Image 1 (cartoon, rainbow, N blue to C red):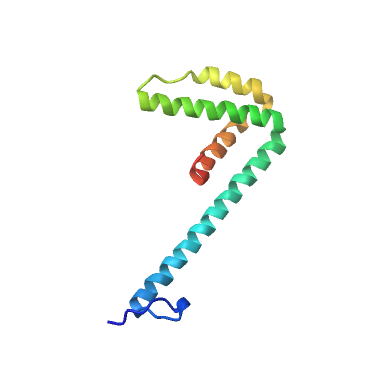
Image 2: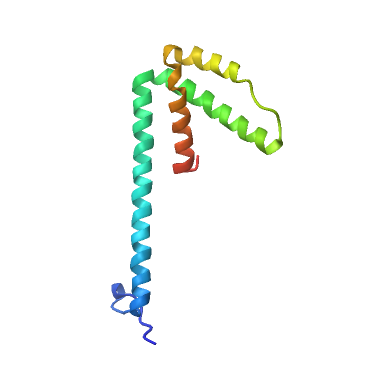
Length: 119
């Protein structure tokens, strides 16, 4: 069997191994492209929310929803009861006013960040 190492090093792999190497390289490029696209989505959504809400209300609502999400995950792990949605709505209404409907988009941002950056 022809067991020479990669053309990059002046050596060659058997054709089937070279095809696997090309496929792995394409997958890595595709994964990198997906990661870059997802990072762009996160940044675009963040900028839109900051622009729409203003920096301070956005950050306050973001931190509040992040904390709510963290507590919910802890309850799931510990088997505790659920939170009061009415209280959450009241807090979001106080933080965001007439733009409280954007809380869903802030939650989407938090979820995307967790997926893309592992935060």
